[in-house]
Amino acid sequence: MPKTWTDPRVPAPEDCVLRPLLERRAAETPDKVFIRFADGVEWTYRQTLDVARRTATGLRALGVRQGEHVLSWLPNGPDAIGVWFGLNLLGAVYVPINLAYRGRLLEHVVENSDAGLIVCHAELLPRLADINRAKLRHAVVLGGAATPVTGIETHPASALAPPVADPLDLERPIAPWDTQTIIYTSGTTGPSKGVLSSYLQLYTMGTSSFHFIGADDRYMVNLPLFHVGGTAPVYTMLAKGGSLAIVDAFDTASFWRVIRETRTTTVVLLGVMAPFLVKQPPGPQDRDHDLRTAIMVPLSEDTAAFSQRFGCDIYTVFNMTEVSAPLVSGRNPTALGSAGRPREGVEVRIVDANDCEVAPGEIGELIVRTDRPWAMNHGYYKNPEATARAWRNGWFHTGDAFRIDSNGDYFFVDRMKDAIRRRGENISSFEVETEVCAHPAVKEAAAVAVPSELSEDEVLVAVSLAEGATLDPAELIRFLIPRMAHFMVPRYVRIVPELPKTPTQKVQKHLLRSAGVTADTWDREAAGIRIRREKIGRVA
Image 1 (cartoon, rainbow, N blue to C red):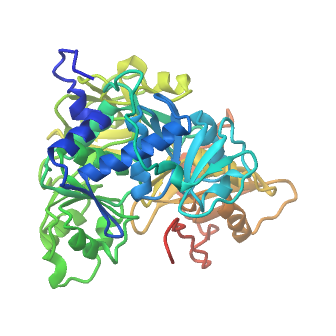
Image 2 (image 1 turned 60 degrees about the vertical axis):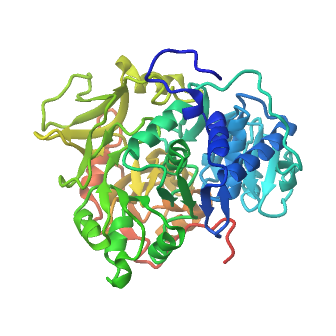
Image 3 (image 1 turned 135 degrees about the horizontal axis):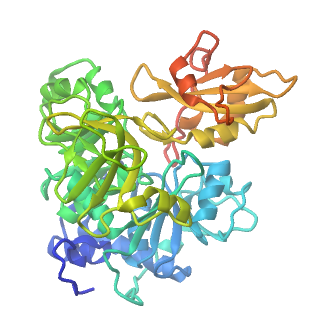
């Protein structure tokens, strides 16, 4: 698509739209390594384009057309990249699913997406058997043999690997403002919302977050590709002409070995990652690596220790799926807890419930707008009410409480909504409560965040019981494990006669949060019940 607009804030398609951008990289630097995967396999830019073209050819043969939504349910690796890029080469919309989803969470995403096709790992396919699949009728199964699911026509991996790629002619050129992805947030007052993101949003998010890196850098992606924390750096390095190392997940024990083996120069460290690394025994290998920079969120007391010990510069940032890194820091910030300052092209305010700006030092909600069109989300799919609430008065409302100090630094204070963040995952209290209340002994439930001894939050659920019922907390946990993602399963269970409520019968969660872990609270970990992430597609 030739550039027909004069607005300098909107770059040309070959700079920000995946198809022409990847084609340009493959033409300019065909033999440069773009991605190194966990098993050591490397793709050059030319190879990446070839895989994407063949995948797109296979998807088109299955009926995928420009603008259609396709679900991707795959672990980090070549398949996930091939499907994402193949879809965008067709101008189709990439809709990834959290690997931990099952039951009602999975059902909601499948229904909301309007997708007729899913590309999924063989180990995940059986989870589709017991849910309402809405329009979903076809599945391309990768990573093993397909287990039959009634009502789903399965297709082998070879369907996405035709011997020859077709020209992939389009009905119209792909524009920067076209929808590139729908990434699902964790719902807080209701079911998860599908964030509509343009090519220009992901481009802006990545290039703004990683303003300090260039074409000679290699970014290690240790966050999942179904989160914006995984997709944004991939797009950043494509836009900058750099390279990536994509791994399964963050692992403390192997982190520095992988950094060395992959020649990684930059990485993001969320939540407990940096504290875990700092607590490892020091040794001569601490500076035997190529890591030059790291984004650390939050900016904690471990920041200076990490920088000094491992010899790399630290930055911080505030971001979420709906925005494009509105707050960023300079090199080695010293204001602990700061989320940075507004970047160029962004206007932010801290406001009260009526969108009136509060005084410096006071706490309010962070709202954002940008001067670049399409640099933030353009709504929640099939949810006009939530879109209108979030975008009221022409500003995007983050739902997060902030304050600003006299130096102009912005500080995250708390989530104004009832989301919980545990070890890098955002958790919907609404969705936890829905599953807990499905237990026959439970009358009502309220899930809240309580402090973790490590970082971020742990999940506490307070429950009141049905008349005459009894409940063993361990039995409740066993009930929840097959119904929800591993990171959502509560650590703490507190059984109360009644949940605290307002006169209008709304649960007063702030009272539960302030009470925290009381003497009568049951601790799953103290009881010896530990729940770990399933390793999809990896050999034990």
